[in-house]
Length: 129
Image (cartoon, rainbow, N blue to C red; front, side, top):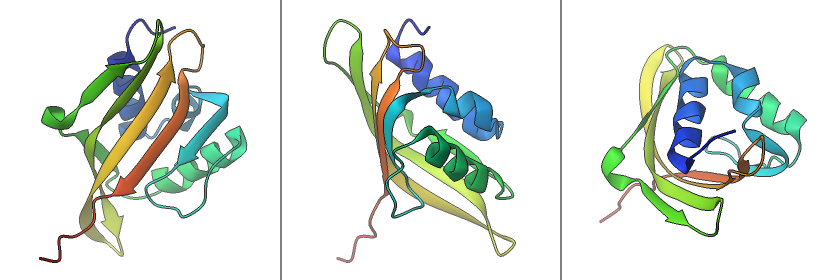
């Protein structure tokens, strides 16, 4: 059990950076929805969430870092919170290191053993102006 929303985000980030798929999927409730950064599909089952992180974890140089200044935590009830902000994904594509800024929102319920009930992430669009 987690005692604060930030601890959930920290555990998620550590799971990604350690490529620990089991630790990652243990954070997602069985009914969680994942709208991932690098897929157009919505992940609605534990198996789909696992497969997404298995594929992502196969990328060389995988790392995700949080832009601390952007983090907002909104308490939505006794044990429910929404975390949002921007993180930077880094990994290799065709042996070239690339980085991707992405916006994220996590809805967490700290009363659950697997606290993530919704996770949405999307790449920050390029400014065309």
